[in-house]
Length: 174
Image (cartoon, rainbow, N blue to C red; front, side, top):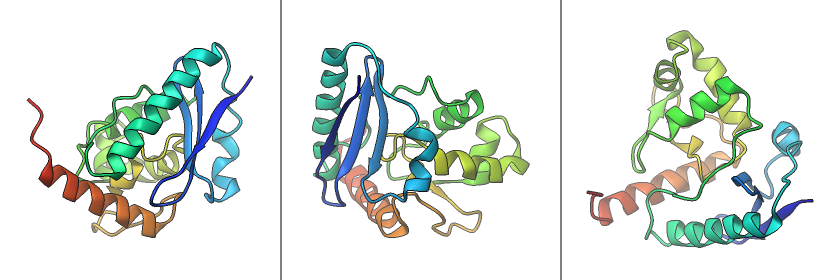
């Protein structure tokens, strides 16, 4: 059983899938299929009613995010099928607030892989099954350059610009 939807955004349609534990997949529909290879192998299962609720909430939050009314997602993501190291890196990434960036090397240190783990972290970002929701677009090269993004560098720049504007406009969380 698969619970999924396609949701329109200003940057193109997103394909989303969910399990009863949260959103398990989120990617732009035109993302190269080789990027989806590993993450699409994860098939949502379980309670389709609960999974549908997660999808509905994700779509509401995505609309608010792209409208500049939401800086951080609260919808639950389901990363149970992701390897442990990848989960650790993605958890460290979730600590980088909207409007801010980090580098692959800094993220490697945060995830306990040391600065030499930057390439490994790059691989994790390439396999991120929940683009936008877990913001791998916030990760830059060591020199601060935009590098690699499964959704394309134009989208990466647009997401970063949106987040900088949104973070400046929204009141700080208390």
